[in-house]
Image (cartoon, rainbow, N blue to C red):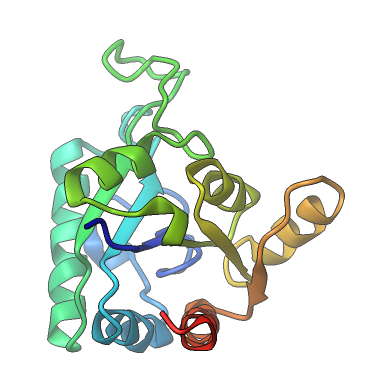
Length: 194
């Protein structure tokens, strides 16, 4: 039986959005992210990071450097007693000098490719899953995969809220940060008796 997951955007949601970090020491993990992920682990949710990383396609860093960053993030969370289960990233950029990355892909959020791939790989029930992010594209991505989207006000969240208020796609909830978003998920799950 497929299980629900919580999808997390990386930059602006788990870590401060610093542009195009090419090394782990350029990341600033929000302190409350560790406890938020631990609570999801304890509740039995797989935690899946879905992130647009066009810095690869733009030539700012390599896929190997990105994998190193994600490996070190995984270790940092493990050292705090929490677990990031998987990372899915889109390396493409239509302006890439490298033709391998200069494509119109289906995996750049808000398109659903990363979520669909994760669901197939990890046997996830997208309709019972959640998506947390700080950009309008994260909310649109959540809707596109059939998950419940939550907007956080860290990163670009305040700008995204204004943008979303002008359109027809809205988040199911707005939270101050990742920890508050997780609290909302756990309260909702408890209320519906899942």
